[in-house]
Length: 199
Image: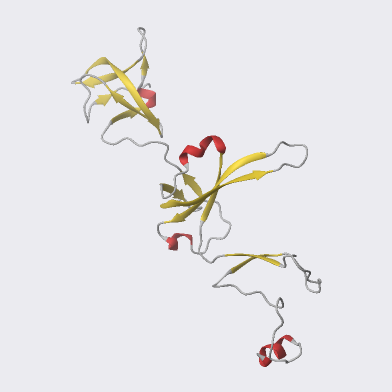
């Protein structure tokens, strides 16, 4: 203790008064400095900000997208170099930005995502990572490009089916839309059916 006090240039008493040092229960990362060298430290005044050492991804969503935020739900992550990876929602909270007096307060949902492989975030600090949330999921369905849908004169939609050099229009019922594709069901449609696309 006295050696440490000597290194700091303070009296070598071998004891430390309460409030003279800050103690953390584990490793921390200094995120920012709030005071400059020579500033007087006062009670309840932060001299630095800190975070944990685990790298996480945070995102803000509009309150209207709250349905997407489900604890432990899987998400997709796209790293700054374009590489995809996955993660899970591990925390969320409501935050309110009070505005600057001219703008109205804005309420957002702050979401914390933990990557499935923590190593993918090594070397990243305050980097922009795209987070993809899943609103709904369908398994074992037929999909076609949205551009393949045809508006039918009698209402609804159809697709142009191409078979043996001939084409025919098959009415379809649409389901979920995602990533430029749409779920379809219709008589005579099966996996591998070729549909026409506009030129």
